[in-house]
Length: 217
Image 1 (tube, rainbow, N blue to C red):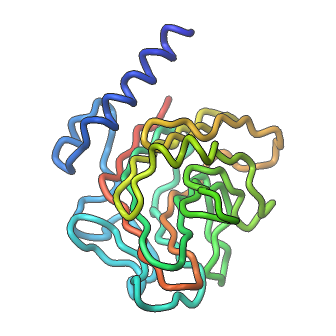
Image 2 (cartoon, helix red, strand yellow; image 1 turned 180 degrees about the vertical axis):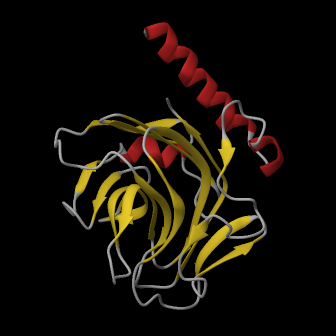
């Protein structure tokens, strides 16, 4: 098991150090692109807030306040998987995130489910933190601020990996593991939509690209 883990972490390190284009995203064994880099095919949400720019899904703008949280969701649902993507956040409004195993709340702009957070809170980085959006409404796990500060690229794209296997959830930011969490509550759904968020409030712009997924059998 230790040998397998070491191989896996080395593979992640190679991935983060080498970068990835949309073209070779397809070449990763077992991974399928969730975003074609040109359209929002396969996704649903407020297209007045979300758009495609320079091969990325972009939500919000750095010069206009955001009325409330907005989410662009996949049409398909996923259970056990590894999700890889690049994400960037700029502007005064220092919060966004990637939802997973989530559902839209009927007749509401919110979703409910797990979130890989992005941004800062209370003067500390919350990139890669595990937040329970609209449910327990709290951080389940946060990363080490000092370690995150060393690997984060402010106002630039950062690599995110989210891996879900049964009750276990793991998250990495630029190769730094921030979450290794086991869900103990049996009634929490283990399947749902993936979504990208721009948080309501101060002006901000969140960008997501090279989004690909490998479903785990």
